[in-house]
Image (cartoon, rainbow, N blue to C red):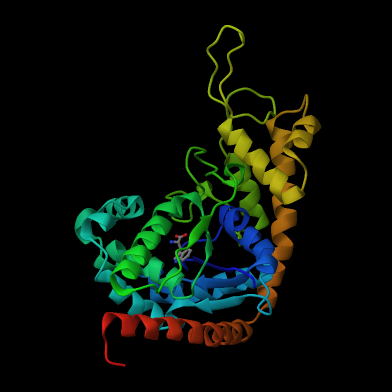
Length: 341
Ligand code: TRP
């Protein structure tokens, strides 16, 4: 029996290389090993101010990106969160065992509510982690592949599952997280200290999967690099011991660009360093732009080749496939809490 994984992406902002290399590319590999459910989490996307036309467009676009990237609906289930009403229902029930201080200390809530202005943050935004717990627990998920920034949400999912089990009897499987190695984190092009982000203020932070060649070249040209001129893969902090008199700072921005180069070209970071001995940032960035364009153009062609009708059918089939699992779990939960069925 294969273990089950569940993961999701919000249909908001522009999906970018960080999402692809950090999540989707990984999911494509995992779908052979695990029984996989991949969701477009539109209920989460409406926890911040949003534009309905944009939400509709992004929901379809993300599903197309899943498919174009190689998520195979014959192997995995792909569906839209709002198509399975049980997510909202379970979230409500879990709300009654979640505690205010637990949610108040969530860093994502603190960050996002600060961005919006504390006064206008919605109750939905506050409740985001409980809905995410419902997503995971509805399907007896054993493993959740996520980015490091989501670990706190997995932790509260485990807390809620344990609390429910203790109070009402064994109902939920306690899920584990699965985080890819640190080296795979893709950082912002304009600030290598933070993860590449689709909600970043500047579009020079990320390369969207749908960016044109011209924009890709422009963004890579503008990407920050570190001081110095050699192409070296290093981000260790400056060394101050006298054994290394040539004290050199790390190069986190360059390391990030080399990571992108390496992941998209299947060349090792060491090979890339060797290729650029004696050459400067200009050459390196030109080649990196080629690598990114050569990777994204075929992906974009695949995305465009999928029609809206086709993707809507796949999403409907996906929801039909997973709904019975969710219904069974929710019925069990309702009995446990004492609802008359
Ligand atoms: N919060 C996740 C993110 O921003 C998205 C998400 C929602 C999710 N529900 C989930 C991820 C369930 C994994 C499992 O990345």
